Image: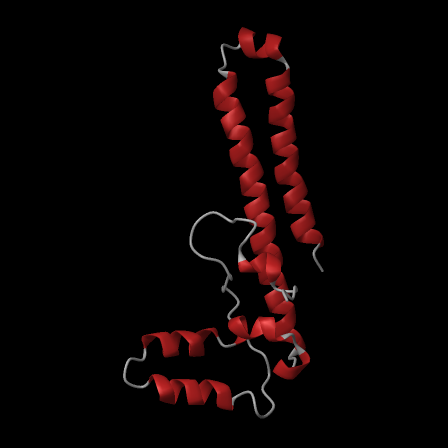
Length: 144
């Protein structure tokens, strides 16, 4: 299910490892007149790129799997409701004078059966670099 993501992540990490081996070979670096600081910076960029790709691809694959299996929302953890009801939450946020109508419409959906359908391109974090405290890492946890 995730073998293609694993292969691409491995390829990216192999590139980073190759750069580390180059950085470690100080004689080669000096003979090529290469600045090790630039390469060390490039190494961290490669590592972050591998991390970001892996997390993004896994989240999108999981969303795709959830959508294909057509789960009823009640079979899923409530922490996934923020993804399932993304459009509705945005409608509440944007609806000034209709906010109570939008709230009613959202919570009315919890009473019956509803098949979970999450936007494939949705990524549950704020804009910017991925950080450990982003909700993506906490989707399956329960804080007392």
